[in-house]
Image 1: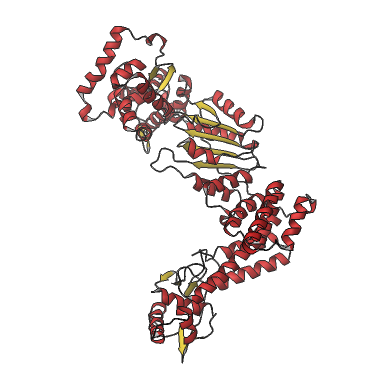
Image 2: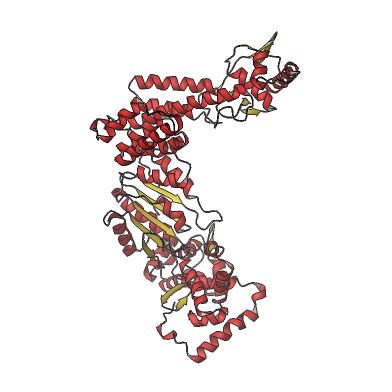
Amino acid sequence: MGDVAGWSATGLRFSVLGPVRAWRDGVEVGLGSPQQRAILARLLLNHGHAVTLDQLVDAVWGDGPPARAVAALRTYASRMRAALEPDEGPSVLVSAGRTYRLRSLSVDLDEFERRVASAGAARADGRPADARELLVAALALCGGEPLAGVPGPYARGQRDRLAERVLGVLESRLELDLELGRHAEVAAEATALAAEHPLRERLRGVLMLALWRCGRQAEALGVFAETRRVLVEELGIEPGPDLAELHRRVLAADPGLAGATVRPSVPRPAQLPPDIADFTGRAGAVAGLATALTTSVGRAVAVVAVAGIGGVGKTTLALHVAHAVSGHFPDGQLYVDLQGVEAEPAEPGAVLAGFLRALGVAESAVPRGLGERAALFRSVVADRKVLVLLDNAHSVDQVRPLLPGAPGCAVLVTSRTRLSGLPAALVDLAVLEPEEAVELFVGVAGREQVVGERAAVLDVVAACGFLPLAVRVAASRLASRPQWTVACLSRKLADRGHRLRELRTGDLAVSEAFRLSYTRLDAVQARAFRLLALPEETDFSLPVAAAALDLDLCEAEDVLESLVDASLLHTRAPGRYGYHSLLKLYARQQIDRQEGPPIWRQVEAPVDLWSRRGDPLAASGARN
């Protein structure tokens, strides 16, 4: 059932604007068979007045009732009374002679009409925004097709009447939306509705006017042409005078069609999570991203995608930059965690629905389809300056529907995967410079904790591979252990076999950040990621990898490049690959027990072979 705010939440409540249902004190009541629901529908729609047995028989069976229809009705009524008032006498379903009636009713249809009437009064008083909200509240009571699933000729007729009533109220709400200047939203919603109801001229007129006010005159004229064709072919009639007059005015580009709109206050979402207080370093990256986001080229939306390994600080950097440039986007900042490394990444359609609501689009005006939601989103932000931060993206396909279309907007994306298919400036985020890592470590651990131990601090951040997450975890461990020295922490991290175990504190763990990327690999990628970490060399060539994996060069290159795209390997020269030092340790830990010493020999053999031959690519390699 739709929204019930504003009508009785206690006692018995009934719904007919959807399936026929009943609640007692908020708990749904089982109403039994479809025939019992048909009887209840007939009684509810008589608004507390008596209904004769003959009328009930006609409602349920029409012209073909069974031989013992009245007896069956009395049985159904008895069962319904037991369901509605199990602990009381006949105070709700009352019988008198050959009639039944319901009393003390609270029905969604009555509340619907009260809200519609209040909306009419508000509109007459010159309060279109209030009128619109009342109609939205009325429509929120509708839970689908009226009297859904109720059999019988009476229900069929009433179903059509109620559906017509609801649709008429929806058309009134769309007209108010036009009055309030929501032209793009109306165009999107009315397009879908007009396709469902091709013979409704009022709805087609709303759509034409919305399109015209969006500057889409040709499309508005196309709607009229299509409407005329359908009316002539299916009903043999021409469009009515109102639609014909609107067509004439659109054709003439009548400026009077612009109308006097009442501009509602436009929501300005500010969804960015807080900036990190101890943001450190990356001055060049911050300046570059800020410039890219605030400088549109031609009519293109500024889109920047930042990729990097887990723990390198993509989200931290993106939030810092987003806050720094937020003043360039006065119409709002949208943020979403796309959960790209989770088992079920965020659905673009659900993300768009949230964005549209944040931008002031009513829930009832949000289209159902992904394409329609994306189109409406682009329309809503077309004349606004909005920054969109898409954090932790899974794929290009997830991101593409979330991009605005107007150059006043900008999009900043973070992902562990290099999103090469996006129309974006791609940034590969590296680890911190040594001095930046030292500054971060000192800032988190506290200067008093590291006095006189600069050399040990350098050893610690080097053991962390200058990875921001690892540096932060190590510094946090030191800060929580005042009795430790930096040298003590350095000794703990010196043991590579236990280094990742040491790099965890509270809910932060470097190995967990890596695990989220590793579990997304397919079997071939995962095997390569594990096995190529076994040799001691810090980097390796394509031929060595191909020999170790027993693949030809093309197959091996595809696998290695896919690991680069996943930010699990890096490449600093063509045909040369390497690991981040901590990722190499993590990869070694994933070796299955059955991949023990034999696997070491399997991998070391081709490495030795290529070393003896002289690796033709080694001279061009760069070491980690």
